[in-house]
Length: 84
Image 1 (cartoon, helix red, strand yellow):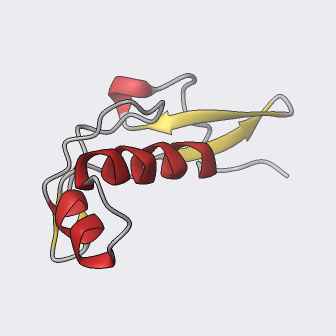
Image 2 (cartoon, one colour; image 1 turned 180 degrees about the vertical axis):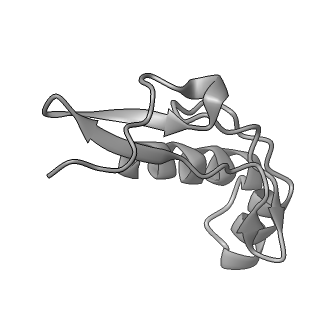
């Protein structure tokens, strides 16, 4: 996630063509960054929130972390109730 955040910032810096805070914020507000590995749409900040982001639910199954929700990105069927 940190790598993706740095790519987003680098994209904003390149588009802002400046290190000025206001210019970077303006570039982020106009961002349509989509070069990430998460199941998100393009980045779009509205009032400081990335409306392109989507929540994921994961579950540890067979000692591995798997995406279970949303269905479009599901790697394994969810196991409910959880067994300890």
